[in-house]
Each structure stands twice: as structure tokens, then as C-alpha cells.
Amino acid sequence: MCCPGSGRTGKGSVGDGISGPGSRSLGRMGFFTLDDFNVRGRKILVRVDINSPVDERTLRLEDGSKIRSSVPTIRELIDRGARVAILAHQGRPGDYDFISLNEHAQYLSQFTGKKIRYVDDILGPHAMRAIQNLADGEAILMQNVRNLSEEQVKRSPEEHSESQLVKTLSSKFDLYVNDAFGSSHRAHASLVGFTPVMPSAAGRLLEREVSTLSKVFQTPARPSTYIFGGTKFSDALQAIEKLADKDNADNLIIAGLAGYAFLWVLGKRVGARTEDKIKKDVGEEVAAAARKLYDRRKEKIQLPVDGAVEIEDHRVEFDIDKMPGDAAILDIGSASIERFNKTIMASKTVFLSGPPGMFEREEFCKGTKEMFEAIIESGAYSVIGGGHSGAAANKLGLLDKFSYVSTGGGALERLMLGKEMPVIEALRASAKKL
Ligand code: 3PG
Ligand code: MG
Image (cartoon, rainbow, N blue to C red; front, top):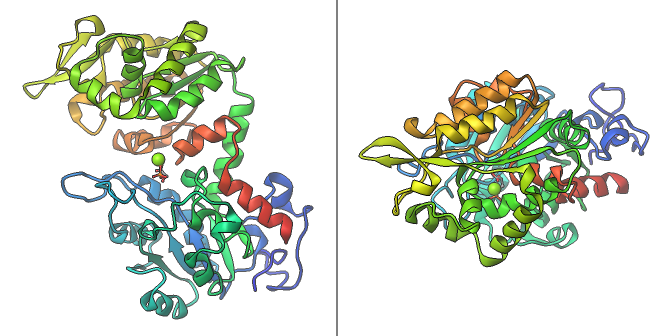
């Protein structure tokens, strides 16, 4: 058994005492961290979030920046002589990006400088043997945990602790470490099921995300501007509604497909092929809520005034009122960029969740590139996250220019709203028990 209180200082040894709420990391955030455990020679089960964008044609990973964010925890555990098995997911069953984690293991090996073997199993004999044979300072990556049907069912931590996954693996490990900040809004088996039955700690990424972001959202420097892009308007709307009512949130910019979805619910025509995409995401309830919000808070909200479409392999921009009937808008247009950037330049805090256009394609990267550049140039405290914002910043060579790049999408939005985060709650509950 691996107990807190011994820590990395090597003062104590495993099992020599349990630190209570007075310990350093508990005092700050209410959960244990890697500082609180002696991990040498111990078997550690680590849940990370390395869910990455996938090229739809080749099914290869498009970007490794989220994988890189998981490296500090894994590297530290390896360096401290732990025996590490990593659990992670990629995509969702039925989606094209639901692929094996084989390539992720190659990225991890490259980033850590240590061979991290991919084990195509979780609960079978192959996995059991691999776990059993782990040497000090060795790490393996297990199969995509969403292959298990019980993984994604929404249950309480206690209910999940009865799952095959938790029952099988909890007895094989001394400590559970959760570093999956990007999934901390999900109550899935591998995310919350181990904490009721095992000593548990947050990894370095989760620790850093929670402490940095809580500060930014509670007391942003003003004026503060919140930009929502990406494709999921229905997901973003809740966050937008809450922010609209917050006194310390000054401007709300809705770009990307989300912005056109907002225009569409307000009765604008944004092109048949854009509307087909929007209709998959936005139902009548969301549309009604968005209209109500706009009526109430329109002075805070900025929407696109034009958009870029593809005509014969070229980018062509149209004002919203002149959008071709069959258009598929792929980026915001120059007039929208100019307006949005004016607001950005006058801000002291800028938060961006989700890219404003289809940055993966050269012709439609303009909105993302120019808004990112304005955010950096503004000198505001800048936080980007959500959707594939980190990947976009990486592609543009701007990743290290923002004050903070979060790996969270939905997680970031929930944290921003002060909503309950199942993973953080589970870690706190587990810490209280010990
Ligand atoms: C994400 O990328 O959003 C996280 O990895 C969580 O994945 P999910 O949205 O498919 O649950
Ligand atoms: Mg998601």
C-alpha cells in the first residue's frame, strides 16, 4: 500500500503515516499531489487525457501537443523509479477518431525520451502480464479505455468502483494518479471509479490547470473578453449564458461555426451547407435559449458580420446578408476579424475557447491566425483552450506566446462556470478519506 505523507523528499517510506488536511497540497486544493507519495518501486496507475485531433483520411494524429502536456507527470514518475501503467481514451466508439493508442505511445516515447510500450489490452492476460512485469522507471500505455462498454456510463464514483475495470486493476496498483484535466468534467469509470478504493493523487498537469485557471476566472483584469469558436454552439451556450450575467465579463465574441449558429437562430441565412451542420447540433431548445439570451444581453455579444467560403478551391468572402444560398462557411471574414480584434486590443484579459475557423486548411486559417496574433499583441493576460485551440496555436508556431494554454475544452468551460467537476470532486473525496 502506498500512503501519503512520505513524499518525494524520501523522508519517510510508504505506509509510515497519513498526512491530514494540513499537508501542503491538501491545504491548497483539497487533493493530494505527487508531492505526497513515495513512488519508487510502486505500481502507479495514471489516467491521462491524450485525446488528439485525427486526420480523417489517414487516421493518423494531426497534432501531439496534448500528448506533450501529459509528459511532466509521466516523466517525473519514471525518474522517481515508479512502475507506471497509463490509461487513456481517444475519440468515441462510432466516430472516425476512435482509434488505437499505438501512435500515442510513439509520441510519448519521443517526448519522454524513454520507450513507452503500447499494450493492446486492459483487462486480459496480456495486460496482467505486462503490469506484473513492469520494472522500476518503466511505463506502458494500455488500450483505448473506451473499448470497455462500462467506461462511459455516467455513474457515481462508488458505482464505478464496482466496475470490472476498477475491480480488476485496483488490486494491481499502489496509487491512482489522475492527470486528465481535459476529461475532468466527465464521470467515467477510469476517471472517478478508482478514487473510492485506492490512494489517489492529481498529476502535475491537473494540479497546474486547476490552480491557474481558478485564479483567472475569479478575478480577471478588466476589460475582459471571452471568445467562443469551434463547432459546438450547444456546448458553448451554457458558458456564454453564465458569462453574459457576470459583471466582470465585459465582452463575448462568438466566432467559428458557433457564431454562425447564433446568427442562424436569430433568423439569418448562413448558407444551406452551414445550416446542415448547425442543425445536427442545435435543437429548438438551444435555439430558444440563445434568442432569449440575445434579447437580454445583446450589448455584450459580438457575432460575425461576414464569412469565407470555398469557391473553386479559393477563399471567397461574403457579407452575411449576401451569403450564397448553398454556402458552407469555413472561416470568419475580414470585416469580422477587424471588429473582433478591435475589442481584443482594448482588453486586459482574453479567454478563447475553440478556433474561429477551419484552421487546418491554409485558406481558412486567416481568422484563427489574425485573432491569435491580436490576442498576443494586446498584451492581455491570455488563456486559450477548448476544441483544438492548442493544436491551432501549435500549427501557427504561437503556442508559447499565450499566457496560458489549457488542455481543457468542455472541462475548461465548466471550471470557468464554477460548476462541479467530477474528477476534482472525486480526488478531494478520496483525500478526505485517507
Ligand atoms: C476532449 O477532448 O474533449 C476530452 O478528451 C474529453 O473527450 P470527450 O469530449 O469525448 O468526452
Ligand atoms: Mg470533448
